[in-house]
Picture 1 (cartoon, rainbow, N blue to C red):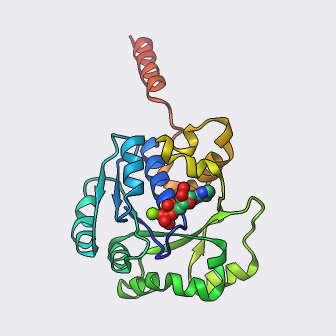
Picture 2 (cartoon, helix red, strand yellow):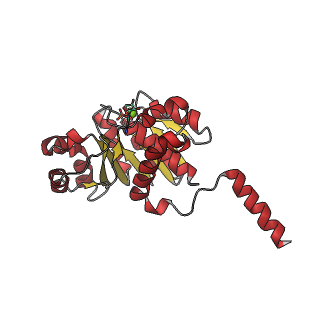
Picture 3 (cartoon, helix red, strand yellow):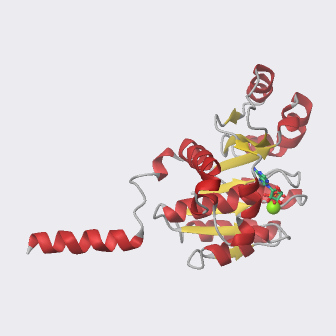
Length: 232
Ligand SMILES: Nc1ncnc2c1ncn2[C@@H]1O[C@H](COP(=O)(O)OP(=O)(O)O)[C@@H](O)[C@H]1O
Ligand SMILES: [Mg+2]
């Protein structure tokens, strides 16, 4: 499955969401490749340090995206593509192959005209491909008490865009995680709200990805050893 995190606007939380999603799927036992399509390479640098066992590929332009994305998709269950901020052609390339487009948007972008402008390239891809990719907007960097208003939902609905019920709140933990080569769910008590929120979002986006509770490797080995003892 190819999941493209796109929005031609920079600084809306694409790399944060893409890197977290790749790390989260990996933690849930899935094979994942991160395809970093942003020249800033922030998500690939982050994941290389945080999860050295997670393969990272850098795709530098639309041609590479169009040629290599389907090849990568045969090598892993999930390819998570972190879209660029400005190179629209690369984003268009991503949407030619993506099964799911996740579009982080700041609340100000939910103003109807802005939403229309910022998501037009998604509708163009859907028209060319006669359906896919399914597109979900995720509210990003919102205040703690933020709620989706009826106006926002109407704007999204008019563009046939679904909106995730879980939003990503503005929290320091998200900004700190890459610098500490980790993820919010590994940052302990201070980041517990961020961890719960992002887990809820990913379960909402990919309910089928969560099959069982994540058991740390050491405990998994103990469990296997115990069951072997019981059986002999
Ligand atoms: N929910 C959030 N709360 C606080 N800071 C965030 C959040 N999401 C992203 N950031 C920070 O905002 C900046 C831009 O985010 P980033 O994911 O790099 O956006 P993009 O990839 O769209 O340019 C980064 O410094 C990042 O750490
Ligand atoms: Mg980025």
